[in-house]
Structures are given as structure tokens and as C-alpha cells.
Length: 188
Image (cartoon, rainbow, N blue to C red; front, side, top):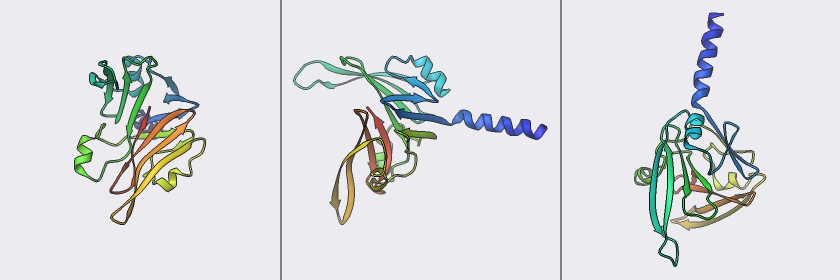
């Protein structure tokens, strides 16, 4: 009985650190809880069991106007997730950036956000995305359309960009150019 209690305690502790993020039916779920741009920060904090760092950023101008693009970013460094929303967009959407693996180039790694790899399960349209996926493996995903561009550089084939379209939503797979595997996922 004592061993069963200890085993239960260990599994509940380890499962509290693991997050499950699903993008299905044009909706984003964290641990089976639907989230969107109207989800309050306190709810995200409770779902991720971490207090996020909120930051408002003024970026470049909208093309052809003098209106500054304003972003609200909530970073969860321990969970390796960042949420962002354009504040002055007519139809604001919640974007999420998830770091799956480290970049081999230290310069790129320092500039990437979040810094450490995501610990949890990421699924897009019922496709598991945590592995170090190559472009060939991404071509086998189901329920989504893939658009990509490759180029040859010094005899190596490199993926320049890869856009996964799932129910009209753009999902970008950002590649590590040295290993040519997916390093980060950006759901717009």
C-alpha cells in the first residue's frame, strides 16, 4: 500500500509538468481546455501552472500607414511557450510559439524564443509533432496541407520555409538549417 501511494505521488508530480497542446478543428487546446485570444492570462497561468510574463511591444508600422503594430506577449519560460496577440488588429488572433528542439547554431539559439525546448505533447490535426521531424516526415502528416520551399546550399538540401495549413489556419514549421529538422512551431 505504501509503495502504491508513493507511485501515485510520483506519477501525479511528473504529469503536472507535462503539458498537452492540441490544434484541431481550427481551435487550440491546452490540456483539453479551449483557449483563444479572449482567454484571460490568469486562466493560462492556471492551465500551465506557471505565472506568465506579460509584455506589450510596439513594433513596425502597418504597411502604407502611420499606425504602429502593438503586440501583447505572454511568455512562460519554464513551459517553453509564448502566446502573442496583435492588439490593434480588427480580428485579433492568439498566436503561440513552441520551441521543440534547440538550434545547433548558438547564435540562432540565443535569439530564439522561448530558449529551452518544450516538455509535453504537441499535436496538430492529430499528428504528433515533438520528434525531430524532417521535411520528408512532415509530408506524411494527415488532415493538413503542406507548402514549402527547399534550396541547395553547398551540396545540401535545406528547407527555407514550411507552412502547414490546417482548417484555414497557418502553422509555420521553423527549421534548424544545420540539422534540417523542425526546431519550433508557430501557430498564427
